[in-house]
Amino acid sequence: MSDYILDMRGIVKDFNGVKALDGIDLKVRAGEIVGLCGENGAGKSTLMKVLSAVYPHGTWQGQIFWEGKELKAENIRQTEEAGIVIIHQELMLVPQLSVAENIFMGNEITLPGGLMNYSAMYKRAEELMAELKMPDVNVALPVFHYGGGHQQLIEIAKAINKKAKLLILDEPTSSLTKSETAILLDIIRDLKRKNVACVMISHKLDEVAAVCDTVSVIRDGTHVGTRPMSEIDTNEIITMMVGREIKNLFPREEHPIGDVFFEARNVTCLDVNNPARKRVDNISFKLRKGEILGVAGLVGAGRTELAMAIFGCYPGQSSAELWLDGKKIDVGSPRDAVTQGICLVPEDRKRHGIVPLQGVGANITMAVLENYAKFGTIDAEAEMAQIQKSIARMRIKTAAPNLPIKGLSGGNQQKAVLSKMLLPKPKVLILDEPTRGVDVGAKYEIYKLMFELVKEGLSIIMISSELPEVLGISDRVLVIGEGQLRGDFVNQGLTQEQVLAAALGHTEELAA
Ligand SMILES: Nc1ncnc2c1ncn2[C@@H]1O[C@H](COP(=O)(O)OP(=O)(O)OP(=O)(O)O)[C@@H](O)[C@H]1O
Ligand SMILES: [Mg+2]
Image (cartoon, rainbow, N blue to C red; front, side, top):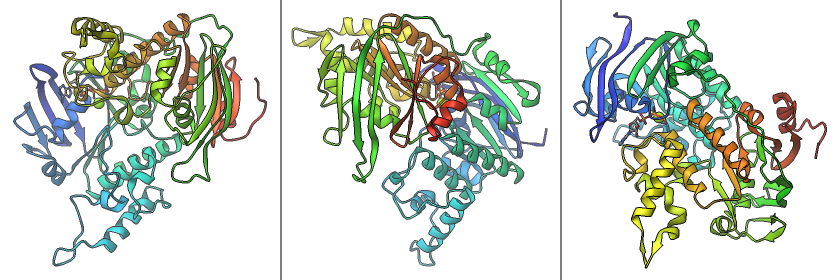
């Protein structure tokens, strides 16, 4: 009993009468790595926010024992002082501040007299970067210079610097590359050796299996079970999560593929910060009617820029010749693109996908509000009917359609953004990392939906960093590397190795 440093008992948390947590227990030993798994909206993030006092003592029921004593923390500062450090699902860095300033925010090293001791902070920040195998990071530069993967590791540096005894990672690898993920998992193992415990929330069950000692699964705010990782495999975790077995993770369905329907020629996009560099370098490709075209490549290869350039996000900075259904089209803005039948579900939903404080429903109908215009006002009834339909189709978990979308779990926000982009009835749908942060069950539903859509004649471009997903779902696969087209493969017998080799520039054949 006493070897547990953390013992959460019977935690109950509700939001406006809706129970997000309904009596959950969670125990963690010193140096133990616990995987916390569950579907979108199961309550994982909420449980960790209770633990770290984002929700202070008194705003939930139950008890938390930390190192044998009851913890009644009122704010994050107190839990951090106790050694509990959380890294949230959505990154919390201040982009304009330097890497060092972010690491030491609220925890500054000062000189006697109170002035900031920048040289000490820079030195320590550099040490941390070296420890995290990112020696090339300039700690004096603003954080926005670095991509999502680096930012995630900078968050980790910040946490390590706080001398955590328990590190909570809420989906830490969702925006990391394979190599960054490997570094992170190594860091977690390293911390374990130093007796630091870790709770890792992740939908990537292979990572959970690779690093965790124990797995705890929750469903609908209740505890389903806790098992040593050595006794179960990822399939069993899935069964515990969704309450049923999912045999085939990629429910591929036969569907007819028509003639070339969309074509992009010579897409080029310059780097804003460095116009001498091309983020997308003269890429051309074709998309057939009813086809799912997977776009693979390493993170930073230029896939998102390719999609955003086609979608008209970079006027003046990008060029492309586009044909849709045999006609040349001009896309000067995302609005243009939507009007002509091209929709894009962005990768970074927080920045481009949602209006956080608006209702779930308002977010869904945002792009098609004019459809409900009636005598100069909005036909609220028709709009609500559509919202209900969308919520039901995607099984978006929300207590009410008018609650702010911000309150939804990450995966459910993603489903809402997807619903929003289906309403303009696109002919070409571009999905950028559509299943990031989405649980296995919901992933399955998103794939099913994609097959329904292509059967209706839509064409889909799916950018994904998950190779099993690209290979499991696509009809054809484009491989992008360093802004260039490195491969265009028919997905028949295509292997992960072939795609990776192409991404890295070890090109063999270019099948058209
Ligand atoms: N601030 C909030 N206001 C209202 N409801 C909330 C709030 N935060 C969470 N909820 C609700 O509590 C439930 C649990 O959400 P939580 O974010 O903990 O899920 P999760 O397991 O982390 O999911 P995901 O895998 O999608 O991140 C959801 O139904 C969510 O809508
Ligand atoms: Mg969450």
